[in-house]
Image (tube, one colour):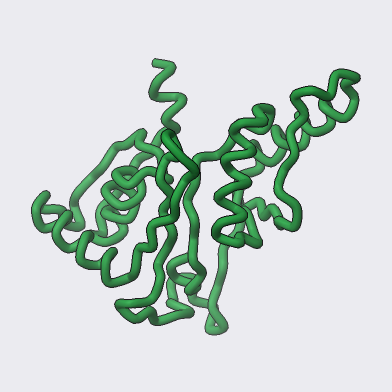
Length: 178
């Protein structure tokens, strides 16, 4: 998204069968006026299967209602290439004040609130973070931190991209199960 000049909104993936989770997701979607959801095949399949199960169930009290008008895009095998065939080329050269992404608060005490992170904010944060940790292209990170959380997204995933190191990641759920 950063390469394409698209404003990403990393969020906690709601449990497809839990109405409360989907309602929180819907609040974020409504607040930021999202048009697309990038997802993986496994999550998309689970969402569809639970929807089919709900439609076949007689008891409708806990049925989940997903936000309308969203296009779900499965990105497991998507590789975007520029016009010159280079998948690493930037399509968009951002300015420091351009919005890089929206990061939403947890919503544990009230509705989630979007925090606007500019490219300037991000560059400053990444410079300090990587300098203080001495991160270089030989840095290796192993993390279970979620990608929608500040430390998982900025401190781990974007930090490795920024310094040119390598990252190994596992799902937070897999980490907690062990």
